Image (tube, rainbow, N blue to C red; front, side):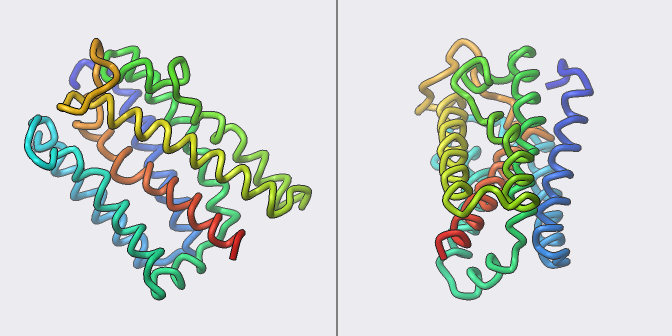
Length: 222
């Protein structure tokens, strides 16, 4: 990935750090949350810099080690009483605002497409409409928590729609990876996530956004 301009990596690193800070704030500044996430980010930085994810093949594919551990961790939190108690301690206002990080994420994906690191189908010029969630997040935050215009039903609908849009791009991204199950981007596959710092997208930013939606939905229907 040496051919990429430095600004793409810089913007994405800042985006990941913003995600970390917002999640830290949403956790009411829990040091435990901060330590766990930072250690995970450092581990994945070291592993991706070593070239581990660049090796194709294997069962399961090495790429799965980016996304599956945090997803399983989130599932365990929701399935255990202790985990649910921790989740209920998060501030849903900040979790709603956290989705603004999806704007620079989508810009990063578009720049990666221009430099042949991801397929067009993963961008807003393709079948990825996730940027709409980032653009509407400040609006939803303002009218729901400052003006108190949006009620629980409106918040629930917005979170469900955005969760579906997130699922769409995650599935598209996974099926664009140059492995046996690839379905998209044959002319320009998704290789960016094999490299640092973009490995942080599937291993941290996406799970953080997923957690934010699920935590807020749980609180709204509780």
